[in-house]
Image (cartoon, rainbow, N blue to C red; front, side):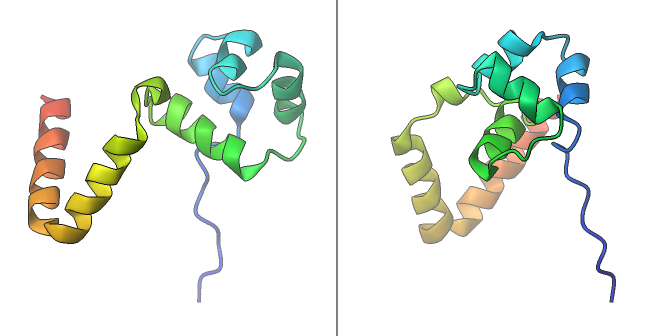
Length: 100
């Protein structure tokens, strides 16, 4: 059995920030983290899971979290459970649109 962990796209936070061409203030403020707190994470301090997930959403997945509303998430969850075929079809169409 393979026990190797799947690589985490958020492991090298400093590298993510540098690739985006942002200074610490710009990068961390989008997550609601102070520059000094972000600096500590970049230096190896353990990052809490909620911060890591926000980092993944905002800086890796490039999602504008200020545009997300609870209602939107509720609609997606409803569609996934009540009409999974339509959900899959819409998801596929959205991916195709993004690529094209």
